[in-house]
Amino acid sequence: MTKIDVNKLDCELKVRISKKVVEKYGLSYVARKLGVDRSTLCRHISGEAKKVPDNVIAAAAETLDLEELSDSPYGFKAVDADPITICGSRP
Image (cartoon, rainbow, N blue to C red; front, top):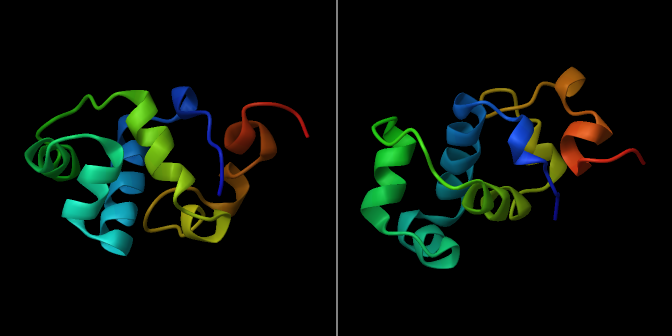
């Protein structure tokens, strides 16, 4: 489980995290676990809904490990995945 300071992420990275989680677990499961409507999650992933609460993105990110988060098509590049961005504090 990886904690991320989502306040430091732009909208594109938030969408990428959401897409990765949905790809891993499926839309219905993720929507239910995050406490959001399937339609809201679909709109967020497709780019129609720009704003999804940070706590939802943080919960989604916690379901991914660091390797999944650093998968460049979905989000962080290795140089972007520093401890401050990932944990929100110094190690």
